[in-house]
Image 1 (tube, rainbow, N blue to C red):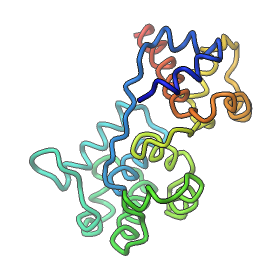
Image 2: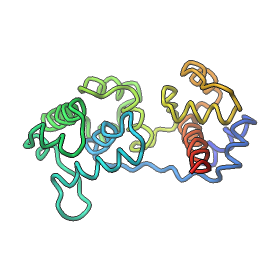
Image 3: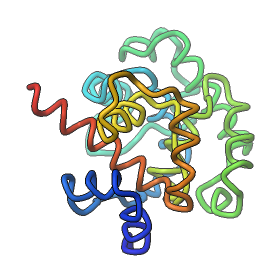
Length: 208
């Protein structure tokens, strides 16, 4: 499924080297319910993957005692803010997840099927109206849940760090440079972002 994208990205010598080092991609859309996908992205905001995963599991276990289910919007609305915060959520994130749950229950959050009928720009507009949800959170939805092919989170530190590594830069590139230089990867910027994240991960693994 990624063959056309890989062929296009290999046209950039820098990205071609990254692809050679990382190998075949394993990026595939999860297609989770919208509430679950956005709630997870909120939890992961500005946290390392390990810390965020620990908090998310605690959040999940507040409501799901057995199995691998996920809390429903109705369950979240029935919980107090202190209960949500007991999982390790900040006040802001607890409020954001409750607002997401309220909007979902009121039919104001697009379902997965409805998301498929909206453009990337429309989805950014809809979801950033939710408390605590910014463009980065929506970009994570677009990439990992909906499988949109041309999303480059140029403000993401992992993407910027991967760009720095790939280009052998001394300092972290600005978001503006990543966005500008990343135009050459269109219409396959999602896969380019995935490779930049993996480049960052590879350096972290070597340091451990």
